Image (cartoon, rainbow, N blue to C red; front, side, top):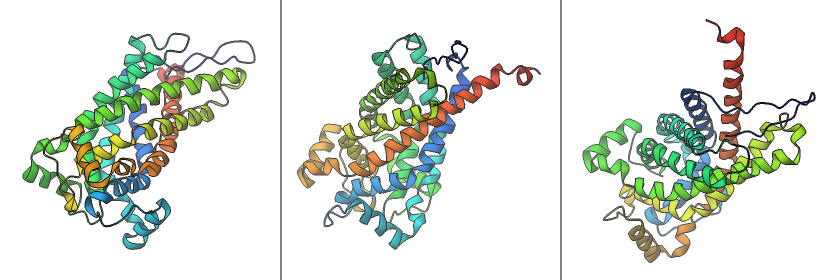
Amino acid sequence: MATSAAATSSGDVTPPLDGLSFWKYMLAGSIAGMVEHMAMFPIDTLKTRMQMLGATTPSLRPAQFSRFFASIVRTEGPLGLYRGIGAMGLGAGPAHAVYFSVYETCKQKLGGNRPGHHPLVHAASGVVATTASDAVLTPMDVVKQRLQLRRSPYIGVRDCMVRMVKEEGVRAFYASYRTTVVMNAPFTAVHFATYEAVKKVLNDVSPEHASEERILVHLTAGGAAGTLASAITTPLDVVKTRLQCQGVCGADTFSSSSIHMALRQIVAKEGPQALLQGLKPRVLFHAPAAAICWSTYEAIKNFLHHFQECPALSQP
């Protein structure tokens, strides 16, 4: 991201952290994505379980978040919250490498690194980035969510992938791709635009301390962006989860991957409130996850920026 310049005590201006090579953006994004998803995985499991509750066990009503959490730990142990983490480990790194490197490249090409605020550039760059990264992450996200289900019929990542190919074909890995892109396009547009806007406001409030408070700025801006974007797109996330887990553990199946058809089928059977299932864990996931991801990403960019400028380290 374009970092606001901070005045030093001598009156000089700290250079922005952009201008890294493409592979360094990929490295920073990959590490940030892994840290984000590994740290918040238990909350993601809760979200998946709650969103699938009406499809797999319609007789049960959604429980309170704390009770749902306690029930999983009591019946399955703490490790029950981490089923499927291997699939996310395989997918999050490459997907976020694509995500951030494409975002940085598009933002630079569209002039988002020029002085001033460019919300449309940030939003457009984010949409392009998520479309590319979703193509990488979606197959592993499908495997991850199927493993997260209560009484999942799959032993592990490999077993799930092999059985899906044999029983449903390769297309099953991308049944939710259209929904994922349609969901993540507004999610990412809101997310990146909010992040850049909040970061700019916070840096402008106290420019003389921008350098010292950089981590706090990224944490606050990332948290605000994750909260707003996740709340707005929850209904589409429910549809995505249902498409990815259809037919598993007795869940409903859909005749196509049409978003409109899936929405109508869910509402007809469970009512419109079903589209908001998992709202609380989704927000509780994305708010800290975005804060963790952005602060990690910017910290690694900062490290790589100073690493490439250090004469002692740059010499062969």
